[in-house]
Amino acid sequence: MRLFGQKEREISTIAEDKAWEMAQQVIAAGAIKPEEFIDEPGYTEEEIKRDQKYVERIEKKIADEQTPEQAESAKKAEVFEALLYDQTEKQNWLGQDTSTIKTSRFDDIANGVDMAVEVLPEDKPASHIGLAVDATFSNDVDAKIKAILKSIDEGTMAHIKYFHSENTDDRKKLYKIPRVVIGAGADTVDSLAELWLRASSKKADASVVKESKETLRAHFIQFQILEQILMQLHAFEAYARRKGRDESAAIYHEAYEVFDEILQKKRKDKEVADSGRRDSVHYTLMTAIENIR
Image 1: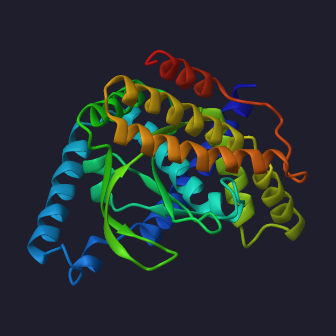
Image 2 (image 1 turned 180 degrees about the vertical axis):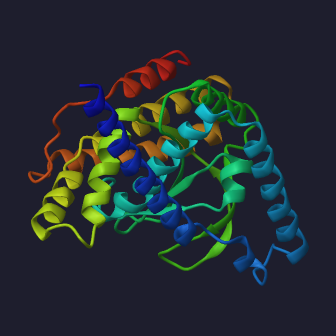
């Protein structure tokens, strides 16, 4: 029995390592590169180099101070972030008119935005929202929520310094973006990572790849994400109004309407039924949001 359990742990570790390797490749390939902004208006080579040195300094500090447990949690978070970036568009988790954009490492560290979502509704201007992705619920999530509230207090909201639209090829800075936190439990991330590996495999049987893609397309995580987004947009709008930040409240309200329409359309999609399943992190995050109202 002991040997069997050890074998299972070894297999699990190998799968996690493969998922993390793929996550690193996906993020490296997709993340916005600040050096590509050198010739763009509003950016200077000196400023970009300064930001790159800032990233190097913070990453070194993190590596020096992280405990082994924190390092493992960071790996899982990176896997979740990468598969969300990779699969949200491929599986239409946030609707057909949505693009996911992996932000630069600078915006990840300095501005707390791991990913941007660009929505291009028909006959409407593009709408943007910043996602702070967390694979497990921890004190870090509480800190991110507090940072969002602080940005509302200050009337600044989220900011992305290096933004590259996949739809218009624009390179620019984005200001006053509504930002939310996305949470998922470790078990959810593990099951998603396993499906992601199988769906991306070039060696697996075609039927296994197809089945994995179909399971990903119908996965409950899409409804969990949308519910988290909507509840936060509603709560942050109400908070902004209480603080007299009407402009911020209006931006959050507009984003709420965009994502509410996405969820309503998804609920009418007969090919993707909502099982109603949510993980424990979802409910913990929702409680945290309820507490700010």
